[in-house]
Every structure is written in C-alpha cells, then in structure tokens.
Amino acid sequence: MSALQKPRFKQLNHGECAGAPILKSLWERFDLSLLLTQSGMMKRSGTPSWLICFLYVIGLVSNCSSVVQMARLAEQDALLKVMFQPWKLAQYTMSRFLSNSFAWTTFGKKRVARLQQDKVTRLQDGDVINLDDTHLAHPYAKQLPFELVV
Image 1 (cartoon, helix red, strand yellow):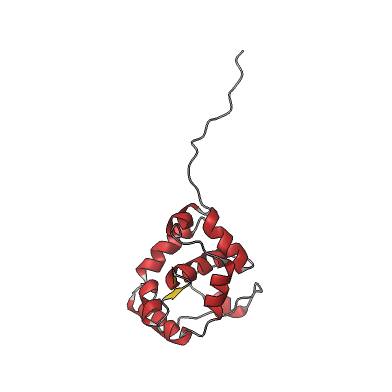
Image 2: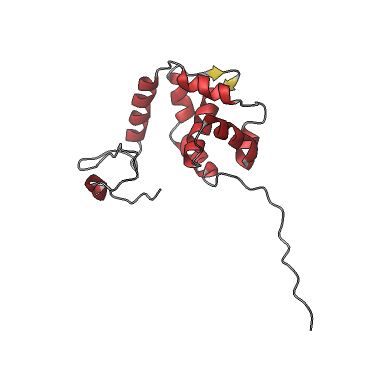
C-alpha cells in the first residue's frame, strides 16, 4: 500500500487585500485620480495623492485600524507593492496628507457628478442614500436595493 503525498501547490503572488484589483478597476472607471488632481490634490512627500487616497480606501476595506497598518499593507500586498514600488510610504506621509486642508468638498462634488454620469451609479427618484457607518440595524437600510454585509 502506498502512502499519499502532500499536494504540491505553485507559489503564487497573492495579496493581503483580495479586493485591491477590483477597487483599482473601479478607481479607474470613475476617474478618481483625475478628480483628485482637478481638486488641487497633487503630491505629498513625492507620492502622488491618488496613491495615498487609494491606499486609504484599501486600508478601510481591509479593516486597518490605523494609518500605520495601511502603510504596512502597501509593503505586503502583491498589487500594492507594484503600485508603490518607487515610493516608500511612511505613516506620517498619510497622516499629514489626510490632515491637510485640501478642497475635499470640491472633490466630493466632482465625485458625485462623475457617479451621476454612469447609468449604473446614477441616483434616481426613490433611491436611498445611507450615510450611517454603524453596524446596527436601521429601518432605512431595508429600503436599499441591495444588501451590504460587513
């Protein structure tokens, strides 16, 4: 009787944040880098502002509790390593960028205008916007046309 061998798996690059490629394609679809630039957000310590903002969004999706964890994520995730290759992103770069007095309201207006241009994300009569970030059940969430499980 022969013994079974352990399976051999290819050593593939994989990411810490499984959603990074999806978020990157959505980022490009809605021209968020361009909108940041049009809102006056260029660079911080040589790093393009869109990369810092993209990493922040990735960090939120990955449940990072601090910008320190987000900065570490850029060194661990396969896609983010390639994106951040020329830059060494430090925690203070993100902190200073996010606490700077950029025109976030302008960016928000441009972002909403861009989302309104897309037939899938365009708001229509009867749509509900949920701005609550708590994990409690609310009666208004039942009116959303989809379910979001966090």
